[in-house]
Image (cartoon, rainbow, N blue to C red):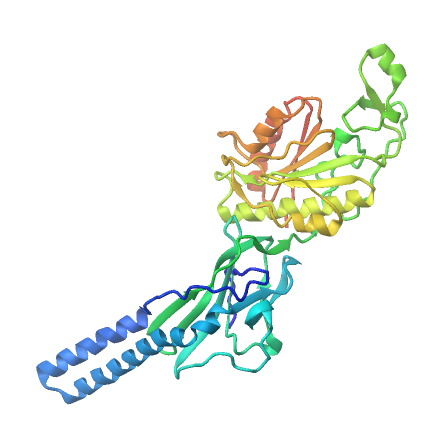
Length: 430
């Protein structure tokens, strides 16, 4: 039995820890309450009208209810030792969104996998035993997976992971019900607090080729130019200059111009980027609730992460020292695979939240953000206010749907007035 909505379990060799067995009274379900009402009516009508058939019907219903209640209540006590030693391990913690995850169920310490086809749990007739695993992200995405631990082909159960995110434990436990649906009892199993599953973003089908002007990377400068191959266009005009930005190659400073003007400028006619270039892509995950519903905000952040990953791959290929950061998190550097996993963590946050964007130094900055109206201060505002004004910043508002065009253009106009800030709006239609 497989269902999608949430999952929750921890890695680590702690399967043998003694977990308290919750003393939970079986809860009557809708069918159980309905059957109880019929039983009461049958006995009442049978007694008043002296109808043996009604009394017998009430007796049958009462016996069925009693058996289901006693069996559902008693089975956990018979299985309490095995329940306490149960463990579920997701076999691959890191994967791409849209793929399939797998887990194994085991009894005893060390995640010793049970033999396929061998039943581990005693069953009462008519009583079902299921393990329910739940995961949630910080922005409310859910994965729910339910399976019978005694019926796993090859000892492995598979579940879909359709969406990007860092999934944490929400609930794990056994559910005991009767086949008639009268009563249900849940036994929670303790889980770790760290991320259980990391689903990295898919590379966007359409990659936006962005020019990072704060670093002088001269690429195709068309705000809506979309392409999938990261080929950069250079300028052949050797007299082109731009103001020096922290982190630029000192060998490209025009010292003669400095002697005349008193300000530092760098030549733009040389191939970019220089070998030591440092770029940081910041993913601003705050969403304006006047433009985005919670579900739309999650999808919008997915778009930012997909484009951030595509850009990271392109820039690393060009030899840049590249890092990725997001609202409320730290700066991540490493290989393409490591950066992809880091992009599993960004979660859609409210615009007025207390989370902050990291404040790096001596790096070219590219901020990917969602359009917003202006009624509340955001992490992006605080970041621009606190930064070194000599540090150039590129802000790109990425979004889907023409309904957000006006908000994106308004935001770009307002933020573009800040010193050292270059803004653009790019709509990506699926």
